[in-house]
Amino acid sequence: MIGIGRRPLDLEDGPINVVLLYDVLHYFKESERRKLYCEVFRILRQNGLLSVYPKHVLEDSPVDKFERLCLEEVKQEILDSSFIFKEKYCGMISHDDFLNQGCVFNFTKSG
Image 1 (cartoon, one colour):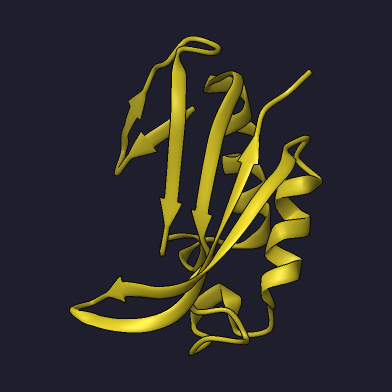
Image 2 (cartoon, one colour):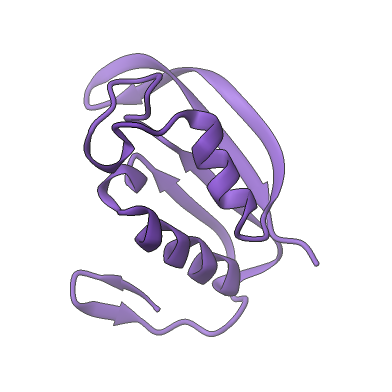
């Protein structure tokens, strides 16, 4: 169950079309991220979209739980959770009132 703070969001299987995980994954340990990916997979509709902006990886000011993780490793974690890679967009992204180079990965839930 995904929660905000201590309050859970009790969602049924498959009602959500899109989930955005932008600049948040570096706060979670690997085991927590894997639980999050599984929960996102559960609540996404068939062919739903998971869009991820993995900020603070090795290629981009690494901090917290991403101190030793690169973009491709984050992508692989998500692929290991049954998502299908759709596309990668790289370019200028607004982050904390600044523009910086970054990448967004999009995945789909299928089958």
